[in-house]
Image 1: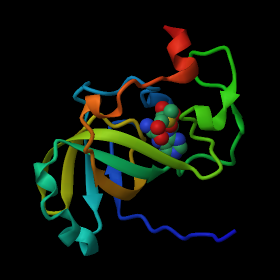
Image 2: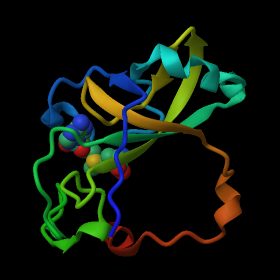
Image 3: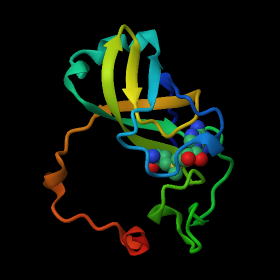
Image 4: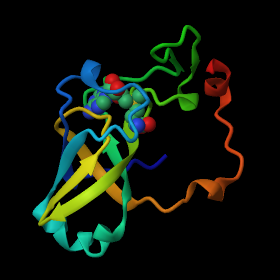
Length: 147
Ligand SMILES: C[S@@+](CC[C@H](N)C(=O)[O-])C[C@H]1O[C@@H](n2cnc3c(N)ncnc32)[C@H](O)[C@@H]1O
């Protein structure tokens, strides 16, 4: 199969210095402040982004080594297939996080509610578009049984 080379567009700066410091799931609406330093060459790509309240960040688990197809999520005694989890040890170590956008100054994007460590390479930014009712009923698989 083809391989693809990805180039970071910036770096995410967060208060979390180690993976142990990072939130393990419940990180929305906590007001934890962070920022993104975008590479200057991508500045024009920020045009009109400031009207969006939330962003989808696509980033690299750059401190993960290798992958495990069976994952053991924190705070859960049972194991699950990696694709049924958000484990950092994935065949392609790509992270996806919805954050709040508070403001943009030049190539600095101020955000809230990160769950990645300081210095994480950012691959892409997309505006978050879906209002909660769009998807209809959302099932959360094994996570719903934990309630
Ligand atoms: C459970 S993952 C979820 C990340 C993202 N929300 C997702 O769904 O892809 C978040 C955990 O990944 C780990 N982590 C965060 N940043 C990382 C990085 N740059 N490299 C490796 N592991 C990282 C931390 O242990 C953090 O608690």
